[in-house]
Image (cartoon, rainbow, N blue to C red; front, top):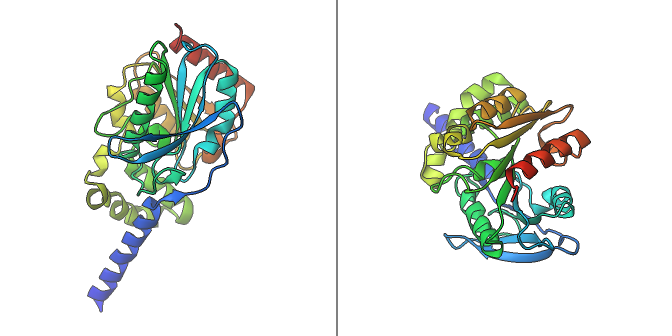
Length: 280
């Protein structure tokens, strides 16, 4: 009876892991003009859907937008239209397993990094004379620094509500849902599923550790009320970032609200960082 209970418990944990990593593809309404809809192919032959805003000045800086887990490029629309209005070229993608991209299992940024690199390569091809930046929210921010190729080669990097490491991320989410004791018990059994699912241990899913490979000052952003990635973790990410980096905590906002923040003071701070980092 005990063995059957153990097997049932482990099976249940595996099912939970499957739900966490399962594709969440969805129909995405096209971005309004002047944006155009395009498709890209990654190094491992995954098709990626994207929306593209081309600046009038072909040498203007170009910015890649990367959405969060369970979302799609539509979540970044406010950010995209604001940046396009400021004169930037913008590419906003659906990462694998999201939106209208190929249905693939999610890997918390490790394989999604290939989507980010493919998108950045496309932007570089379109804008060979431009400086490039990336803004990633949650999963998207992790994808900007993880993976077998390391951080994106950009001139500006904004990381919004990005988890420091996968074990902490999973623990925080379980704790927020059902409390501390269940989180202590369940987290390792979920975190270490990364090995059979995509061939790497949890140590490879650490944006915090990857920060020492980033070569440009970073803007790290979080929400005051974010239970998934609380301000203390945002500060830790900032302190691990290269010299000249900065951080900003958005008052009164939770995790999913950060990506849609249009607080004037924050927008001004972000604009100042981008102008400084992407100056021609």
